[in-house]
Amino acid sequence: MSLSSSSSINILLLNPNSSLAMTKTMESAANTIAALNPSISIRTYTAPEQAPASIDNDEGIKASVEAVTNDSGLMSCLRSTPFDAVLVACFSVHPLVKQLAYSLKPVPVTGIFEASILTGLSLVPTAEADGVHEQLKWGIVTTGAFWETHLASGVAAFLGSSSSPSSFSDPRFAGVFSTGLNAGDFHTISQDQINVRLREATKRLLSSGNITCVVMGCGGMGGLQDMIRAIIIEEYGQERAKDVCIVDGVQAAVLQLQQTVLSRRVFGVVE
Image 1 (tube, rainbow, N blue to C red):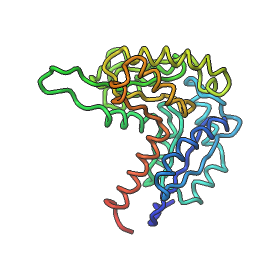
Image 2 (tube, rainbow, N blue to C red):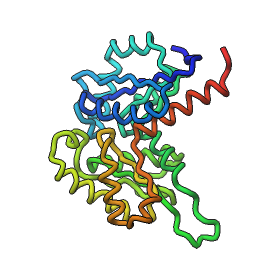
Image 3 (spheres, rainbow, N blue to C red):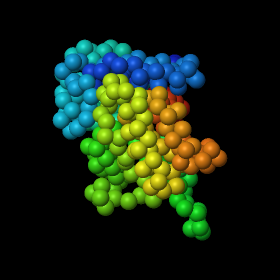
Image 4 (cartoon, one colour):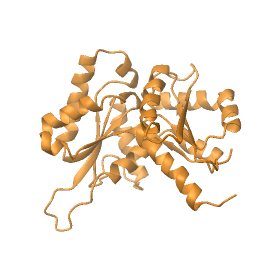
């Protein structure tokens, strides 16, 4: 596989769970970015039925890796189709990100978790030098309680810390706040139940500090921005809420991969 020399950017959105509904949700989010740039095209892959329908713990992550790596159809597709970038669409520290980055290099590969961290950091200004103003922060609203420790550890590792989640501290990071739901619940339970759980988790994040960026910590949460925005307005007021960004990890990853592909074309070796 080689990088395309054309102006087009072909991205494979790889969903490592077996939920077609979740793939469609994430494809819709990705296509909102592609619509802004006609050179971007999105192709999707959903893991075979051996993969869990919802990845909710370490066992689910491992099972999804096994199902995807054993899928000969995917491996053949990756070898034969000139994708310019690959997006691993699971909001976790997913091993496929590193595995595919190694096996497909120099093709850029990222996950929605990694892209969300970089986007969150880019949207949070640094503290004022005089120390008068409170440091603005970003944080994650996610699904089940398992993810609180998993994602906090992932953020710490990504930022180069060897500390445990309990001792890790970054002035820009407010933490991870879970709804108690799993990823599949966002497609199966009532909207009222989702509203209640999402409201509780988002309010805990907003009350934890001066939040200027809320990251939606699940691929299945796509489309919930309006609900989260309403909660932010309720908690912070209309004027202050205007300064708060809401990050969809799929959209963040598509934007990041676009930038990486273009950077390689501008700054890389011309073949």
